[in-house]
Amino acid sequence: MTRPSGSVPIPSRCTILVQPMSTQLTIPATTPGRFGPYGGRYVPETLMVPLFELERVYELAKADPAFQARLQDLLKNFAGRPTPLQFAARLTAKLGGPRIYLKREDLLHTGAHKINNAIGQGLLAVKMGKPRIIAETGAGQHGVASATVAAHLGLQCTVYMGTEDMARQALNVARMRMLGAEVIGVESGSRTLKDAINEAMRDWVTNVRTSHYLLGSVLGAHPYPTMVRDFQAVIGREARAQILEAEKRLPTHLYACVGGGSNSIGLFYEFLKDADVKLVGIEAGGRGNGLGEHAARLAAHQGFTGARPGVLQGTYTYVLQNEDGQIAATHSISAGLDYPAVGPEHAWLADQHRAEYAAVSDQAALEAAQLLSRTEGIIPALESAHAIAGLIERLPQFKPSDLVILNLSGRGDKDMDTYTRLLGKLT
Image 1 (cartoon, rainbow, N blue to C red):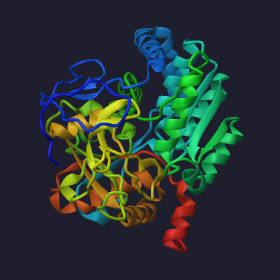
Image 2 (image 1 turned 30 degrees about the vertical axis):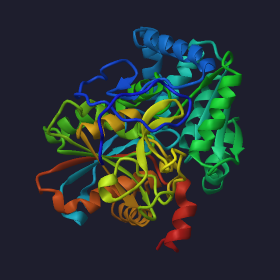
Image 3 (image 1 turned 45 degrees about the horizontal axis):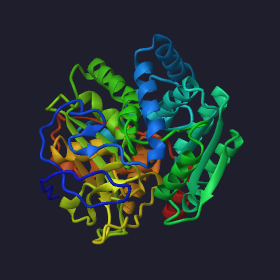
């Protein structure tokens, strides 16, 4: 992907085409809320006060022993951390490549990594005295996690979800309603995650005094990309300790799927300073390379078109857009990867060549899901299946001595209708 240099213009509320600044990789971000030129706070004035309040409360919470103790207690005794790092012996033998370990985020309460962030932000809502949380969801897992945490903490919960996603994730809609959440279908636009975020932000603008927006990925205005990453970084911290105990060395590769990017940055972050550990994020290649056929923002080297720097929903990052700067339609078999932008920290890591991003097709993800199911007895979420497919496609690049950790971000219960319909009888 060509990454031209230049300067970042004055913030705008609209989607704009701008050129990134040339910078040097610095960890953490060079400026709070910025990852090189990416990130920032591009929102209406109405939201500036709650964002400043959230940033202040989060900074206080990081240094508050009582908050941290409550967070760790819920992660352990409610969510089920630490999750295992499982050696995938039969998958390793079947592929004949590197030694493969699976970070089992699918074993968490509610079935995915989303609960890590939902617990953290739910506690922040309580700390701010806000009795209601607003959430958006695509695959439904963040909505379920938000509804779960809201019920546990005694908060009201409203979840926005595109009606296209509601149709393909009916089980998760039922789970959210069982937990007491109000699920509001969004009919605008492509009726997917982008549109759900738009409606959630409109709600937040109207109800900022009583409501906290529990954003589910490393997207949006500062402090969300940093804060969500911090809540998800527990994945990488655990994985690092576990692989050192199991193999007495660091992995050579990390693999994770990338929608907004929270599960992947959660795994990657603890390893950013380890130059010999390759970070590989796998996006949704959908059904073709043309604009509207995929959701690949950082895989232009594979011929995927449409991604350029711009502002979407509060942050400056790579966005799929047409020549006029209008947000492009996207497609993925996976509701959780079907989003036109990517987290700003991922854009920065791609620019600096610290992480590699590639895309795999719908069909490759389906086949990878079936392979894992039949070799390891684990049915993965469609999102996680993309990461497995990405690893499979790169087998010729591996040496037998290589060591891989793949983040199994969620389980496949929610996707069984899709699997059954597209794979036929699962025999």
